[in-house]
Image (cartoon, rainbow, N blue to C red; front, side):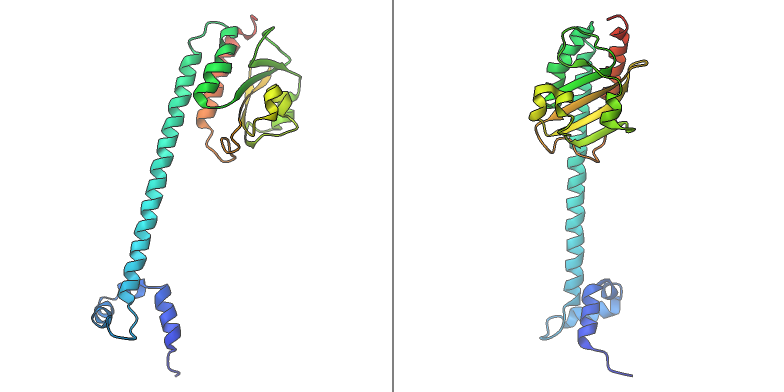
Length: 219
C-alpha cells in the first residue's frame, strides 16, 4: 500500500475543514502543534471558514432587511396613490389625478390607461382610446410585462414621451367588455425590470379599473 501524498491530504483538508473540526481528538492535537514550523494550522482554517460563513449570513440578512424596507416603501406609495385617486368624483378628475398625483407618488414619468374601442373623454392626458386588438399586439396572451420599453410601441403608448422613457410596466385591464391596459414608464432604465414582484402593481391596476368602469358607460 503506497504512502499517502501529503499534498493531496493537505488539499483535501483545506477543502473540507469540517473533517477536522468534527473530530475533537484530531482538532485538539492540531491546536497544540499549530505553532510548530511546517505544520498546517487546520484549526485556523476551520475558524476562517466559520467566519466567512458568518460574514455571508450577515450580508444575506442585510440584503433581506433592505429588500423588506424597499417593499414596504413601495407598498406605502401604492396605497397613497390609490387613496388619492379615490378622492375624485368624475372621470375627468381621475384623468388629471393619474397624470399628476399618481405619476409623482410612484416616481414614474408617465402613466397611460388605454381602452380598446372607446375614448371616454374628449380631452384627456392619461385615459385614452385605442384601436381594437391593440392590447393583444402589446401583451400577446400575457397579463403583464415589465422591462425595457419596446421602441416600436413607445409612441403609441406614451406619445411624445415615448422617446425619453426607458423602462415600463404594463398590465392588462378589463373594462366590462372593452380590453385595456395600464402602462407606467420611467426614464430610469432600471426602474422596471423583468422578475420584479407585481402584486402591488396589479392591486393599483384593479383599483383604477374599477374606478373607470363606474363612469365608462355614462361618458
